[in-house]
Length: 274
Image (cartoon, rainbow, N blue to C red):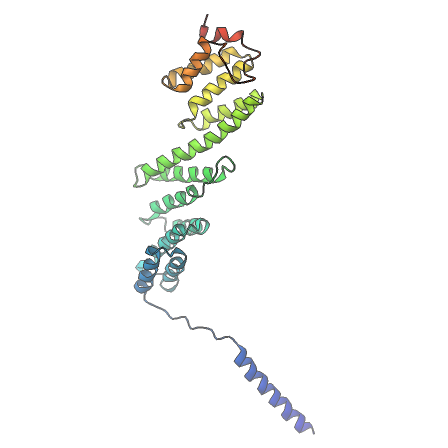
């Protein structure tokens, strides 16, 4: 009887082993392929617009052949493939890794530039969220700091100026809102930030004009005169400087509602106008 139970147990164990073996998933064998073939296949996919498929293949070049001549190039190409596929977070992560692993490589300058582009192309609405614009500006300034006369310096300078202008524009929009609401002190802080932090942006002449508005609304004629003089000296041909001079010549002209209601009398002394 005991021998019969033992035999049944042995048969059951054998059956379970067979069933388990049949149920186990078959693990595909990882076949190593030549680096140049993997790279060419990935490049073809990338050039055909299949960046999402190309990036893993470029990464496979490095995985299978980490010490080959194509391994480093495959890293930057994987990042580029993520970029063209609009997968910017993954592109930035890959570029950071490339820069960290290959600080002396000839492609590092391009990596910094592509990283800046990855931030720049995510700018949607600076009025609502300036964070991405600030990241793009910082990244382009990094390119210019490291490679002031580099291949990508001209475009980096142009795009950093545009990003700076976007950020200044947001400050201007907030400042205009404050000045229309009669919050002149808060408005001044915004306009002063534009003049201080975004000196090369095209928003500065208007910021100076708005500062004159705010100072006059507060009855601070001497401060308005000081700011107006800065505008006349630095931006003599600007429309906004002409507006400042027009205030001095005709303080009773039509002005935005709420502006100068308390200071019309004092504007006559602005710029020593009689």
